Length: 208
Image (cartoon, rainbow, N blue to C red):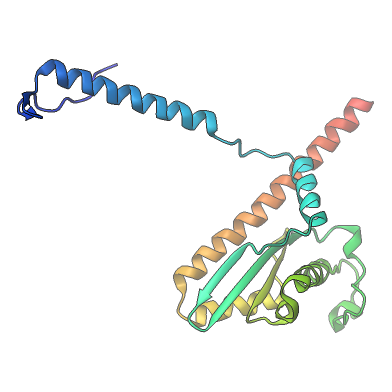
């Protein structure tokens, strides 16, 4: 490899003249230090890939241990909002029936075919989980927003209200950043669901 650019071989240090050999030795030492630093970074790098089973096991462990956290925090002059993002599968059998005590929309009652209550289920789950941590603030849309989306991109009513509030406060930059994070969450969910389905098909083929 080519040697990195050397410093001028003139001047003095601590009363002693700097020679070309001194500059070469220092340049070599810096280059070796950079290589060692890069090697340490590669060794300490944590793999980003995570299997669906590992993600599910880690999440279940967190729930058992009472681990609660929001995904995004927004600090406004008169408002501090905690956002917990959830992505649900509208085709899941567990979301066909409405949650207990949930008011069925008139459109759902008139045409129940293909209707699902994925957003309602996940919203209630998020509020109940955070209620044990923050109390009544879990029901305050100015303090806590369960930003629930489906894998198809549909968002809940309170999520849409929150996004309108962000735009009304001329926070275009914050709005763009939030949309990017929410889109990434949906993309990750769909990728993990596709991976789980492919692995299930491979396992079924191997059993034949």
